[in-house]
Amino acid sequence: MGELGAFLKIHRVGFDKRDPQERVADYQPYFKLQGEAELKRQGSRCMDCGVPFCHEGCPLGNLIPDWNDLVYRGKWREAIDQLHATNNFPEFTGRICPAPCESACVLAVNDDPVTIEQIEMAIAEHAFAEGWVVPEPPARRSGKSVAVVGSGPAGLAVAAELNRIGHDVTIYERDEGPGGLMRFGVPDAKLEKSVIDRRVAILEQEGIRFVYDVEVGTDLAVAELRERHDAVVLAIGSRVSRDLDVPGRDKNSGIHLAMDYLYQRNRWVARQEGRPHRTVAPDEEITAAGKRVIVIGGGDTGMDCISNAQREGAVSATILDVYAQLLDSDPRHPWPLPPKRTPTTYALEEGGNRRWGTEVTGFGGSEGSVTHVYARKVTGTSSRDLTPVPGTEFVVEADLVLIAIGFEHPEHSGLVAELGLDLDHRGNIRTERTYKTSVPGVFACGDARIGQSLVVTAIAEGRKCARVVNNALGGTPMDQDRELLAIGAWSGEPDSTLRHEAEAAGTVRPGEQFFTGPGSRS
Image 1 (cartoon, rainbow, N blue to C red):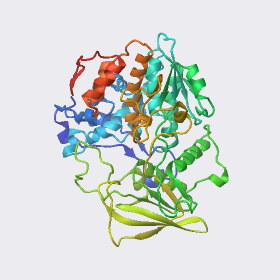
Image 2 (tube, rainbow, N blue to C red):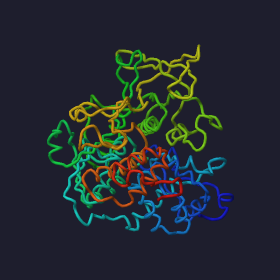
Image 3 (cartoon, rainbow, N blue to C red):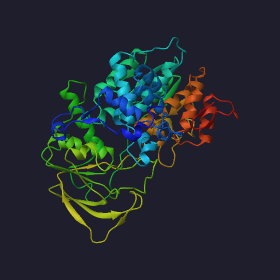
């Protein structure tokens, strides 16, 4: 696997990033791939580990050592086949996944990990450039119809898998284009929307129907949806944003949820490029231009807000993060666990600021508009165990505040309420581990089922959900069912959970052994 001992003499070379001062002037991708020769060298660093922990880190169970080796040997055609075997959309994950596989790389114990994400993206882009990614419609149709509500990564994945085995699939999307938060939450600088459109065009040619600007439960009655289709899959995401209940929150304008801002900015970019978009009334526009911007929350969403604010021409853009400053060796997230924060990000490189260990306690304003954020220093390992530091209260000036502290659960009004679905203690759609909701014929997957998570987890959710739906429709076992369920165990799911799902999907008989451990599939 790879070049013997290459990891000892070849250093990690990541994406080639554009100069920060240059890239904040546009919305073009801020990075590009290294050349083919360098990518082969990077692939050679894969260590031929006895136990490849990268599998443990990847919810999809991507065959990482296999395609690292294939890239090293210049076998790009075989590499895309290996990649597509477990991942429907490597061009997405190669761009915006936080790469927990790299955190779990054995090299990361005391060195820089293999540049797995870059190699993944390179394989996908090489395959598209060579014309190897082409529509593959099913040879036959089952006569069964499935509705998928939501076109984020989970919805796209479940639709792709069900269509592949011959079911007729229609995706209903309430927004004007596909992709969910990949389209409306992630800036074009990280994921240009042509990448989504390119894949969706292939899915359409394979037979999947996309219906936009339709909100099920409002524009389309739930009863009518169920009458049209033999099964319904809810992939509606976790879209209820967490808010701050502190003094001044409701008394001052200029304080917004991060996703409201990001939706507007992505639609603004779409307008500049002549793509379909919804307009915003002038009095509802959220802009950072010429303003002092404070973003509350230091995750990916907060960083995307900072990046957009810089491109708009903000006077300043600062993140207030409750997390304590990172140490050289962070005991909170030991290997192979992925870190919750990194020393820097693309947005901070572009001029954004970050204040660690900071909790917001209130907002101040003048004439109904926010002018100040009140905060204090705190200690703790996460937002769940914060302890204020006495005497550390301070005030920062602000003209625009964006709240980016995560999501609560899927929206309950409309579709979920009308179906009368059972919810779990966190407000997610309850499925009892089998993707089946409390209503017969209705399934759920992705963030709507498990809470907010990663793009790679959403794709894995869609793939496994498709097998359960297919079995419920009386379909023949899907190819690689046992393989994929076994690989799912590498993402940390208990054997009992995977067995439960396998038996529910009809891909393994009760009591039959189907998984014996990492590196062994039966």
